[in-house]
Image 1: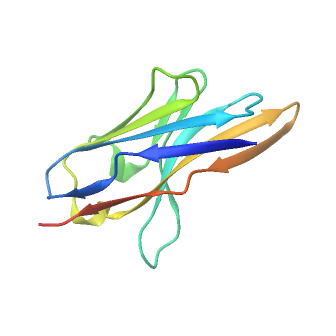
Image 2: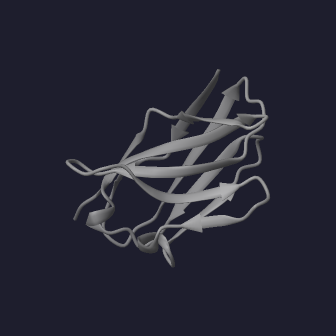
Length: 119
């Protein structure tokens, strides 16, 4: 069983930046990717960005040009750097880790960190 610990959320003004961090611990067999999702109040959870083990990344359209995802210095860690934040980026941001063994895969989720963008 793995645990994901997120940090870095907070309240910022439009145009400002934030960096979210996530570190996985516990038993992780073969991590295939890590990423960030977000869920705004009253909306479904949506993909923000993922980074695979080989370093390839995928960003949602709203994130392109403003957000970037990268691996941290610690194994099983991921960073989300967000710039030019907008009020519509307000949401709870969840860290995700996809683990696997053989042909089976499963997901771990963090508890979420609140990002609020407001004047």
